[in-house]
Length: 487
Ligand SMILES: Cc1ncc(COP(=O)(O)O)c(C=O)c1O
Image (cartoon, rainbow, N blue to C red; front, side, top):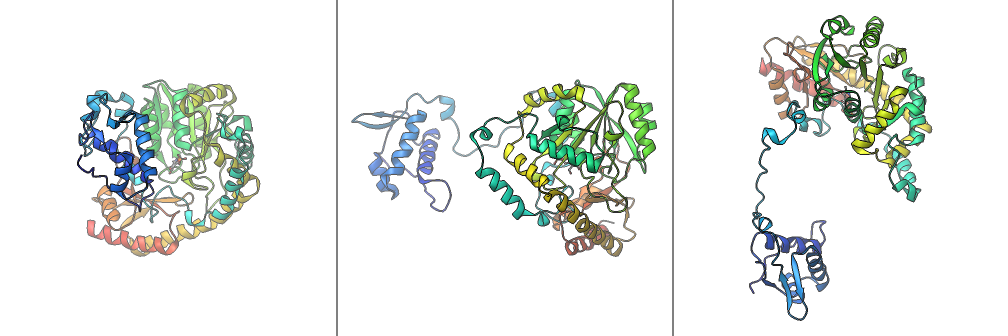
């Protein structure tokens, strides 16, 4: 038989036996080896390929096991005659997957818009990237030690399925932290560990909402929340925000049959305002009168530069209408994927059941390491260090904006959080500016992507968490150039 072309690459991680079995499988599927055809003996293939017989034997064994080959004692190895035709028609070169027809996907998926692009959320760590903390200042050595210790000490039980509520020690540590620093009224039994606040929102929506329920959202607001709520089948009702936060009087007017409202009271995303005390009371009162839920997203409240941190809305709620959600994505790092929900006691069982249906539980190794990180004081220390680092980064950004973008942008509230929103001059298109910035290695999220309804304002969200002060200064110089070019 003709020599089989099976290219091997010794510089890649894939073991040689796997490269041989993959190559043979491909040759069978694309028709170079026909059903019933005899294939070379292991000895002759090993010689042809210049490898020992062992990997060839392993590859043949694998394909015998998968049913691609059949062995006849004494007479050799053959391609199986019973491979289904549709498998054999698989082309050698992968075709681009066809787009699903509208009816192939659920209504809920169709209503989730494509903006902003998903890739913009995981681009490299570059200046102005929104939502990223100072990954360069994370105490990696201390963290690695804790993770390694947990890993070494892992018991068989800890390798099994975990508690859907989360690791007990972490829930206790989080409850303590939230009571002390966020004035949240809770005990550990109310704390449900989830894989980030995005998962928290999906879970809350699945537990509390029916498809087509009306849910009020801040306008402009967090696009991640819009996606999660739409994916749960909710109809979004945009309610404007002003310098006191969500405009509750408008909610009262538009809020007929509104089942829930999503808010970021400590640091409004994206504009950065803090909800005033009177608005907080008005919102709690509205929720109690209308039997509506308040989904409070307290995503980056640890970082406040001018005044003392304001407590969570949940702590002021006398009627158990607030579902409080938090995350370690900003305080530590997003790849951790650990967030939490403080659930009103009456709803605990419902949340737990839905959580079980979703994804069972959050990976437990990081949960245990994180509990130690909190208990041993690393978390509190890290937050203290980060507050002064972020203050320095924010100041560099503001200085750069004043220096290079004077008259070009109007800076919004910058007292807290890890980004600053700026409004662009009349006539500029924020998508166009963001695209030009991207070409020059600077990230920026458009303000227009934060609107559910018509976009009255064009602007940019400039993250300052993940870049050092001099890189931020340089990025503002580039922004100034881009704005002048675009004008
Ligand atoms: C308003 C808001 N909520 C939550 C998050 C974080 O979500 P997660 O915990 O899923 O990483 C972000 C990230 O930027 C955010 O801006």
